[in-house]
Length: 196
Image 1: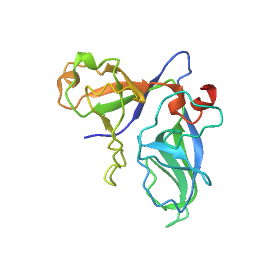
Image 2: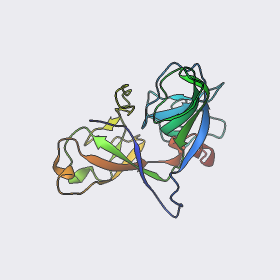
Image 3: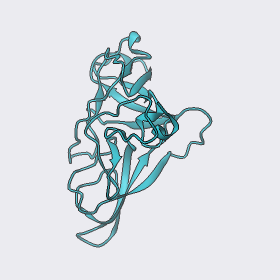
């Protein structure tokens, strides 16, 4: 079963802390944000689920690309509107409470585990791919985002950097693989570091 993005490790010399930052969620936000979904900043208030893959590429300093991601959603906290209790959850259940904040992995060097929708081929290593961003369900709170084998698209926002090798995963019909951002400017923070 697909689960979207899962932080697996950090590249370089980053200290392993979980790597997330906290951003507000509009308490009236009516769209579920599942664990492993991509999120973006809104123009007025906090974060929302992102429905399209970010587009890499050098940007002018004043450009704003609507498909840029802030990062990967890994949970949230809010005051439950039913019982006024502080609540921590792996997904935002949509208009569930007040004082809502989402936890987002914003690190451009993060490595994520995600499910491949097809069998693993060794030639997939290094390919650029775009995820299929499917909304999660209420049953487990996980995203349904996956990537397809053999895409290798010129503007792919993710690079396949490995497969989980445990003797059975790499031979399954939907194996877990490791990906990282193909370019820092896929992210809201990263685009400010590149110019046309």
